[in-house]
Length: 523
Image (cartoon, rainbow, N blue to C red):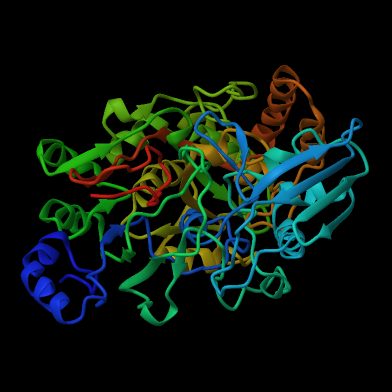
């Protein structure tokens, strides 16, 4: 059943009636030009500072904006900022906001709002914490100017302010930024190209985002998350589908216009469907699958038990079980920082090879006490399939495993507690995982982040990484960090792969990215 946004055929069929009505009421509002999309899951958390969930990031990139952003080459460019400069010693930075920026409630964006936003975001974000630790003062010099005074140079300052990784450093009104970081903002008011329509939100069914008529795009061409964000549709409807197959069939039927994650078993059909186009990218636009281990709860509070897990992961078997075609997968990637990226390395991975016999002996020697390994799984997802492959190997070597399938919002809620779970499978965008500063399970080392892994050497090396001035220096430090990560086992990589998105072939202007972006899209 279609929602209240009229489809293209419906709009055309109603053309005569609309034309007749316009003779009587020439200013009558026309039918909305809409786009209906199915994303990876339902948006349930509307505060981009509050979570690392990618679905909230997608919501955040449409409703909010950031001071800087990343282009497709990985370069950081101004977004809300018009101009910036730094002192010769790189200790004082000033950022001047663009003209015409307004919040969705009509109030102007001020430097004071941005300062409050940065301070709130930094409480939850590991990179933000590092930046603030090196910051002497952060204040608004005037309504349009933000001023950073640093204790020592922070070469990656712009990279931090423009990072595409969740929690996103989005800007919000100071009154919302006053919300304690451990609480969620009461309403999502940003300055982005789309506006959240609260009274049309139907949890479990659909969310409506409207074009922000007051948004002033940059003049540059759109480039990943940078440049002009010209919205050419009136409404964006985020539909909730019960499963991927239902969504794929809806895409073929023209009931939806875009689906973020297509089911692998339907790709042969979709590739032959002339009304549908597929979007599958490589490099940092691929995904990295991980099993996140809970170091605060048995049995993975035992380092020796954690290390056994490296001998149980079979990336090729996992991707095959999921159904990833060869052209969409990277074979046996040992790098925490993704394969095919500047920091890719196999350092520390010598013992991470499938070996059930060795794992069985090591588990016995580790003193495992048959504690249940409680696996939180997202029911019906490819990560649940990945979990089944690993769980079988775990059972074969003597682990007592209890699988608990849940929906994603429930997993997010459960993982926030230090007890009652042992691990969960998940997959993340390569833009999140290609650097030790952004890799969820490494960057959060010794921070209050679900999994609670800690080796004090890593935070110190991360600080060194932020101060490194060359790529070669950063590569060396990233290699050192990975060696420690293989010892610590914050997570286990279960594969690097692409999940193609699908969209109706009459759509124009869709930005080529693994991130869903619906500015510039038209038909």
